[in-house]
Image (spheres, rainbow, N blue to C red):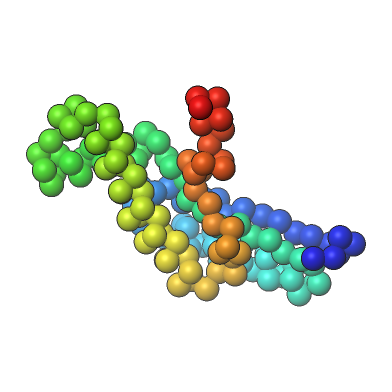
Length: 130
């Protein structure tokens, strides 16, 4: 990338890992994709970053409902550590599905920079706890 070159950077508003994409997500991707492509046509270097958001409380709720529905247990029954494992398992399932859906939309994101709001690099809380 030429340092003299004009740059345009935007981040896809990260969908929550609580489920699958909906029409609103598709519309946002379509609009942002048009903006990114327009900047590219103008000769700018474009960076459009994908990712997913943890949606902490909402994700906890959907995982708790899943445990109750599928195994008839609560987070209190399995304890904190096992519950956290269940949340990360849910996150992985949903994140993969969500990102695959965005890819199928044909969005011109830089997939090498995909991120998650709770990954090690972006989770500022981990820096203070460790």
